[in-house]
Length: 59
Image 1: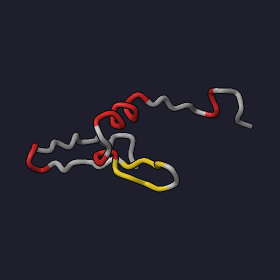
Image 2: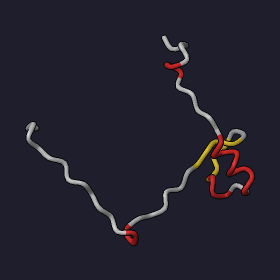
Image 3: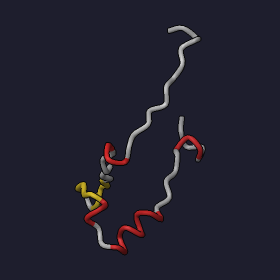
């Protein structure tokens, strides 16, 4: 590819968009977060994730 190639920004209209469904693993199986009750959805939103390389454990 040439260094002069330009990227065009993609613009979508609201009617062209589709909802992205988020799934998570719960007690050994996968479920969509949208099926959780309001309390479980809040717990899911508050989850904290870590990156193993940042904790100094990665080799």
